[in-house]
Length: 181
Image (tube, rainbow, N blue to C red; front, side, top):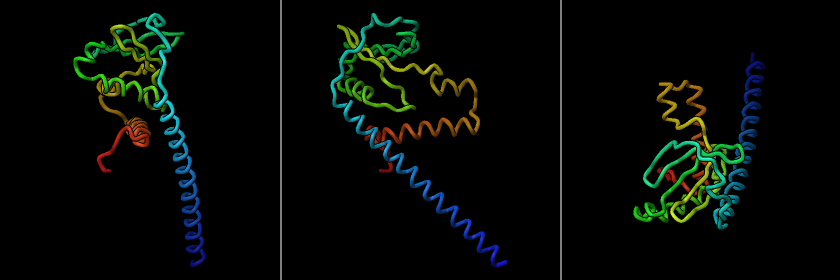
């Protein structure tokens, strides 16, 4: 009987060692990814962007939202749909949001993460600022939740993991701080 217990303890110890080694390897890969992402972010953030498109390059399809500064439209360019955020310059100035708007653009041009909508193009004309972002056709999470009523446990885990990973990325870039620190 003593041999069985010893064998069981040995197997448990080996399993724990393997799990610890795998966790350490995973943690190292995550740290490496985040360090590379931060370096890439800082390079892009500190590089002035150029206008890479103009309004005439896009087919305006429909308005999907309006806000304080302007509206968001679904547009097409080279057979790809995008979300075009159109901001009125005079409104941005009147609401004293120039610095905030410029920071938003610089951050969007620099971030690159699978669970965050990425900036594809940015440009301006005499009266508007334009941010062209990847279009997420599923809509807002809360709109979707309202229509289904309740997420399953698996769906909740899936969405929570995506949000947590996006927060981890933004926190690592020091774009978002957590209250506990």
